[in-house]
Image (tube, rainbow, N blue to C red; front, side):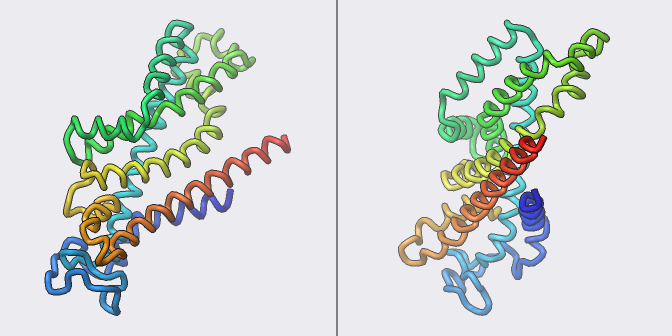
Length: 264
């Protein structure tokens, strides 16, 4: 659990405080220094417009990690709400909502997100919408499964007999049972959101220039991949490290919760 907190704190610090350590303006064009190799002034070199790559990476963390956090939270809210409605709404609501979930699951998430973003047009809001509406299904299935197992427990039956409204039962009696499982899923979906943002950015559907998002940086560096490969390596390395770290933290969280359950 401690490692999860360290990772979460580190990523939040990178997204919030990273730009404070940027040595240059990430959007400042400096043509005389374009495509400079790493040196004392520009530790990671410059891009095709002479912009400092290190500064763009640090500012890009705010876009890539911040948007991934927002998208994963939106997906969590949508999926959990649908799963609880399926568990609490009776067999017809359960059947219809789960069939809708299965329909969404039938399409690859990234492909569906690219189609949605392409139809809506490139931009940050279409990116958020596309990745949010294609990433909620796992939450829904887990919330529905746990909800069905919880509804027969004594405290839930008593709350229902006492006449409490459905939203109150879901909030105070279902959610506490959902949080551990959803937290583990959320870490994986947070990492998938980073990949999705970078993929859409690389395809030109995500955050638009001159904002320094990591996927957009990969797109800009693609033209110069042979002459200056470091332009693609730096943002790619940032994506890989963040995704790997989050997945390892998710595994640690899952193991910690499994050990707690075993002790109980």
